[in-house]
Length: 357
Image 1 (cartoon, helix red, strand yellow):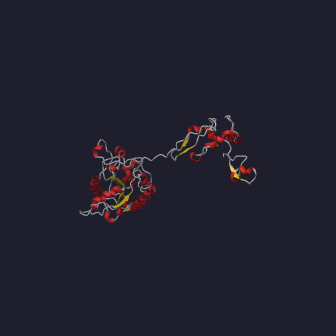
Image 2 (cartoon, helix red, strand yellow):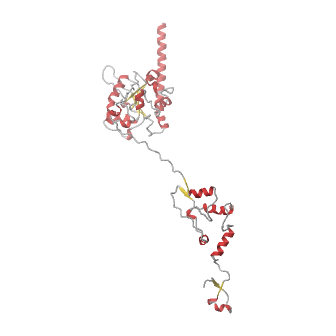
Image 3 (spheres, one colour):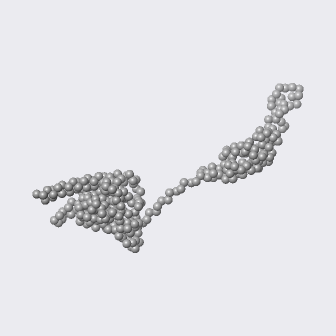
């Protein structure tokens, strides 16, 4: 009953076999002993392969390259009594685990054995970008110990006065405006054409005499950043700012940052500015600053240009987007300076002619 039967023609000897079946001479399934010997003969593996047997090592390397899910256990090897490979624990998708299959003992030293000892090749995870925590309101007492050395750089009849938010720590201690290395004010001032060369923060006091430009802030007390100021104290600085503009009468005022213009709008209109109402660049003529309506010398006020913030902590706009906004202001400043130069030259010629006559 253990033999495999197949159909055959009838004969005298076949009468003993039921249903006309006869036993096969060679069984289809070989014995385990025969299969094991055939396996060793085909793979050229002896019972005790030498470590330098390149054919045995090749067979092991082929087994090593199989992923865990594709490796199948050889029933002949299991029947021969060889110890099966240990079941490896699956890892995350970032890791590629390779099976360490030892057919006949440990493999020879080399790259393959190092791979087996390692068990898996780990790929480093990408570093997570750490977000900078935003600061909140800080009362004036927090920086009361600082000696704020910054003062306004103003004069009468300037081309443009730049209004910043408030001095930072470095600016306050050094006494020079926009003095932090990450602040883009001086670079944008030059790149836009407002100044013919790149100026240093230490030259802030010379801006009126050099280029007819002025500098001031809406809040005078220093903080680490603008988030440490309250809206109330920003709004309180609007009145003083209007007085400065009315006193010195510049042709234009450049607001350096959206938050400053939002504060001016709240005070003037009694409400927050709507998103669709805000715009960078030149504002409506009705928004002029420092208007003088009474007295002997009425003045229509300075036209207003809203520029982007230059703080290195603000990442709302890309550098080229900031440059596009500042270039519009720079073109206007260059034209005004050219006109003044021409007018000054004409006045000089007239004065010279009158003296000679």
